[in-house]
Image (cartoon, rainbow, N blue to C red; front, side):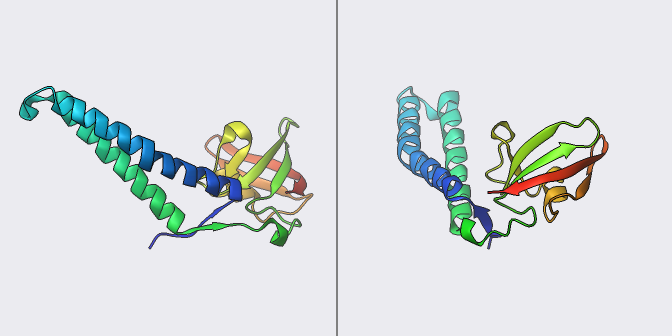
Length: 157
């Protein structure tokens, strides 16, 4: 049994859409690629066929992984979130105490994390260091380059 993964509704919908796409379009394209490679002759010496079969194995592995994630996925209910402390699904505004730079991040599950859009995982070093902190607290976080200090400025949804 896999461990429970928590998602926003949007994050869960994105995974469901990816799974549907892989099962329909992905499998159809894979079957076509295998058939085209098979039509090229002797399978024992057909590198294109071997590559297509390997790609099919990777596709099926990704489908199985997504099905496993979705089987244990739970949607977080925003109405039950306590905004007095940083937790999964909250948005936190922080100040780097070393250079006074301010940043905002949404704390999300590992599978939804995307730094480009300001979503960090609750299991990342910074995410772990921020979770549980209240507004005004200083989070001291061990990162590869040393210890970073962040002041919690604001917690919201």
